[in-house]
Length: 380
Image 1 (tube, rainbow, N blue to C red):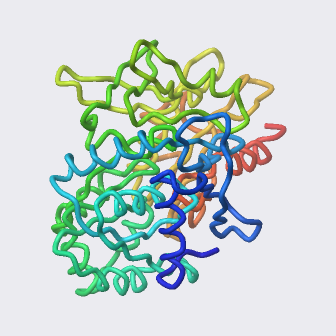
Image 2: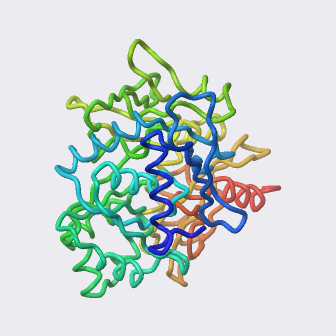
Image 3: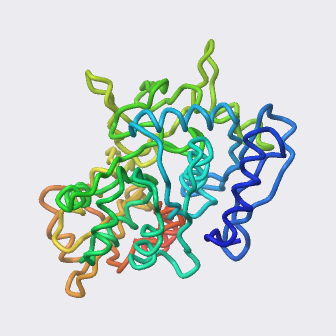
């Protein structure tokens, strides 16, 4: 089912029943066609379950994450406090991902009427603008991923720019946002709030590096751990995975991420990349995020994906896919631009593509791109 203004009411009713314990939990998944698949499910193993949402699957098989009424309420309240009020939300993301679900959840807790953008024809600035013009509340919010915001800010029409500026805040998450994109939004007068979180934390729970009210952040052995009432109950039917990913200490429940991070003296979080993004090539540890950041400085490169692939000589080789619309840019030009700075970390394989392969929620499809890079690197 594609969520649009015509069928939004039935979705809201099912979700409201689940939140008010007047109906079974609601599962948001993906049908074989790729559209949102909305069903009800009895979740006997978890108390007070309201929503089941799949993780993105960007790093492996998607897991069905169970969110309780308490966790959703805590997340909704903390978001309203961070945004300094409740208002009307525009749904511009697929509902099978937690950021989309949360647009409807926050609307229900706030008692406001959301509007759903029709995504049946894909995400376009024209469709977004038309949907945003349907909002009637003076306080307006939406959630986007970086690729969506980039499309909106690429030579925007006066109408698109006007509706973007009318949002009190645009939550931006799902993937790291390039500094250039954030600068472009600021220059355009658009209030963007970067978010960090996952399905396991009811979506974003750290805004602009600052944890939401009652959310705790700590770094253990270099990895980010998130705690508080917003943490999921666990994974449906996957007890071992739940035990590995979640930890209870006293009254606090923690989600153990696989992200590397650091906290400054004021408690502001910087996410440094995934722990499994460390590439060991010829005995040297190379951070994929550092290589990607350098590639993204190359003129004509809008985004970069870096991974380690098997190598008979080095154990792992650094390989990359860069996104560029410049027809003159090729692998040798990219390699020449970064070789002096990166040295041994310079990717052995570089593919120049018009677009990185992404999932529906805007995250890069890591598994697909790693498979492609490994295939190209085979025998080298």
